[in-house]
Length: 425
Image: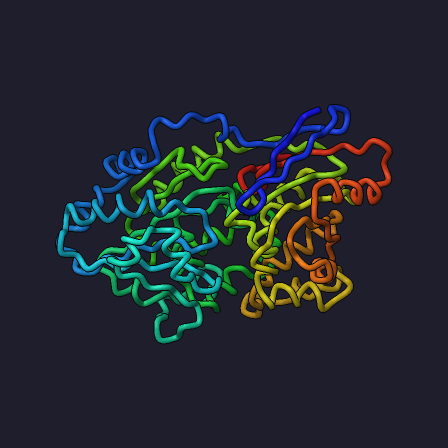
């Protein structure tokens, strides 16, 4: 028997598999990677040797208004590790700089004070100027041009008014932007809703290169990169995390060159080969990424890449925050025929994208490929309305899955962290 542990909320679920049923476990080698130093030291080292840029302390000299774009509550970015080092580096070069931390919520709900304290610690929340971006706050948005996709690019004026715009973040595989981090702090991080909708249009989501680990000829990435350059994002500090959310790698410097170096490091560790499976068990890496169904779609895409056609995906996501959005929920729940839903999405032009349509489109794509059993704390009826089968334990889900695949000895693949791997065929 082999026991596998799966992150689930702030805890984990475990299950013992017999050797004849477990076809494989897809894990990135991040877990066996030994970091060269502590997270604090890695960030400090990165700041002292930036890629393609002067040090941040040099860039900060003679700048009056400095804006640091920071991630929101939906991302496990260890801001308690990164932000103090960035603030110290800025003030080393410019003790009197006016610094604003701009929370990149994208189209998510606003981050609460409690969540800010959890991210940064009480001292930073109490003593620093923090502003939470709202994609619908029109008087805080301004147009900086037209995206390569043709969409109008609006971003937060706090960033536009900065003498120096920088960001923190983390790099992980991303299911349609290729990788997170870098340029994503601007788009979608501090962009207007209409800009995010144009970038996340059905045409781009349907593009074969809008997939995990792909940047070349990825139209979504190209829009994001243009927005970051045009907004004059000057410097980034990005980290790579293991499953314990510990920093194992840090990179700083030019937004494009430093990000590329970080993605190359990550790619060397998290690429795994697909194994044809009847049943695939995946997660979203636990809290904070599995707070709702919306976010959990990411972990499902890893399973989608390895499960057989008409197989079963068991998705483990606590979903304490619900579905993740009314638009997302109703786009799935209000139509019984998912093929019709997909046709509706694909018929919409770039300027006609509806809120959360991209996530719904990807979930429908997954559902057209395989059945999904959703293990969560959610109400069963809500899960069913979203065309998934509800369950509340791995054991219950496996019993249902084995009935659905109608195979005497189904091949099972486990993916303990579906957002940490790039499954290659």
